[in-house]
Image (cartoon, rainbow, N blue to C red; front, top):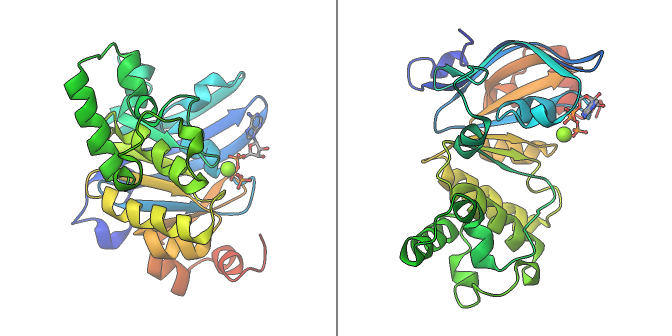
Length: 262
Ligand SMILES: Nc1ncnc2c1ncn2[C@@H]1O[C@H](COP(=O)(O)OP(=O)(O)OP(=O)(O)O)[C@@H](O)[C@H]1O
Ligand SMILES: [Mg+2]
């Protein structure tokens, strides 16, 4: 069983378990024996230099990498105890349980309202009252409702970048996923919009298990309960965020967090 960091072993439930996981793009191995668990209702940050495999690991957590030709893996990833590779698991329903938010906010060319309920429409849900409820609840949870409630039927492209990213978060949570994956969600945002998203994440962890990739170490320190440091496709260190940043046990972690390599 992949472990949680020691201090959490009695208080948190491992919700996602990455079990001796190796991953290849064609002949190139980019993840090596990754072994760790992400605890339920916590925020875990993945950090490390460019190319170390953070996005690759994140995209394996909802099998987004299945869309890439020539991939191969060894080992297992379990969500709430069930392997993602179990033949009974349907990728579509897996992606409903594990939502994703990307670096570049990507609303659809539709109204704010239709963006939020996009996946419900795809699933054939058309009950206006229910849809209205989902829209309001998701936008409130994404801390966007007050800013957009009077223009729900206007284009999403009329919103600021930070608002568009919160809209993408609302769209991701409208499905009631259990896990929210965020790949550098603030990379394209200014500091104020970034702080809004960070506040939002801290609220969302009551309901969701969150895994975030970030290059911003201050951000990891501010929002993440746990931090995992990766280097050249390997997990080097995984610990409570404060311990990892103040008392790293590995020299590579120390070098990275003190800015000696990027
Ligand atoms: N679709 C792909 N096909 C082949 N190789 C890929 C593909 N995507 C990523 N890689 C390679 O896998 C390795 C890990 O990439 P990945 O995108 O996971 O890194 P990362 O840690 O997210 O980097 P960054 O911080 O720059 O986003 C890199 O060497 C990259 O070139
Ligand atoms: Mg990346």
